[in-house]
Image 1 (spheres, rainbow, N blue to C red):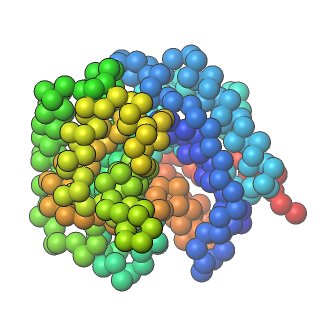
Image 2 (spheres, rainbow, N blue to C red):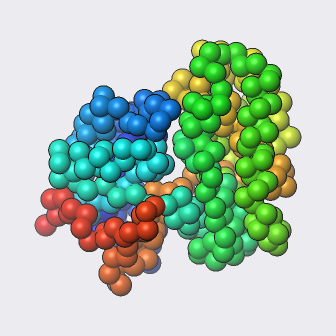
Amino acid sequence: MRCGVLDIGSRTVHLKIADLFPGSPPEPVSSWKQPVRVADATDRQGVIPRAAIRSLVGAVTASAAAASAHRVDRLIPFATSAVRDATNRDAVLDEIEAATGIRVGYMSGVEEARLTFRAVRGWLGWSAGRILLLDIGGGSLEIACGSGTDPALAISLPLGADRLTRHHLPDATPVRKRDVKALRRHVRSALGQATAELRAQPTPLTCVATSRTFAQLARLAGTPRPGNGLPAADSLSRKELVPWVSRLAVRTDGQRAKLRGISASRAHQCLAGAIVAEAAMEVMAVKRLTICPWALREGILLDHLSRLDGGYPEFMTANGSSYDRTKFPALSPRS
């Protein structure tokens, strides 16, 4: 089966296509993405404006065309926190469906954490033992831990890099020390209250991070390797990350974008991402994280693959109702 996962995130609409065969990992076929910047456009009341909705409709339309061109058998479209938490979420999803014929589902943050954990387990294997996972998105932070295919415990907190930048940091850079300190206090307070049960679990054998935010921070803070001088991008040390919080704060967006690992599109939010990453590592007593290239999209593919012989399960949406995957449209089935 050729499956397409359509991820509508805070900054991009990303389509990942893979072939699924029982007993084998997903085989990548194609990846396509288009910037939409939904989080940047959303106002402080949580309303996604008309211009951003039009951008979403255009990106989903283009994604459907790409899926059809690649003869995708089943398309799994879902929205993460930027759309899920919007005040006008249902109206946005209705408009996308009316324009494209595609009904976009959404899942809770805890379900996102579960599926991302599944991807990490699939990438690292059983030798990783008990895993602690940290995942910073645009709107939320997911933390999960466990020894199995699925986590024993998982939480989702509204501590995404985009969300915190918009709500807690000034638009202008450099950022004042008092604003950095205030955001640190907010993040650590939220983590301290929400992670008590996670921190009481047995010490994990492997501590892992996923997401573009962690990957960029690993490149930024990584120690250059002997020989080629390139930074290690497969792990992130808290000791190496800590000084970069203050270094990012005193730089403008343009200056941040010239640093290794920091893209121009994420320069404005990288400070908040670094603050969350450092605080989460401190609260969870993590000295070093392994960076995993698989995340939510791969977790959905693995979850789908594991159930090919048992029918298609349901995602639980944030409001408690279910969204049946069998209703997702099949686009141009291959002969």
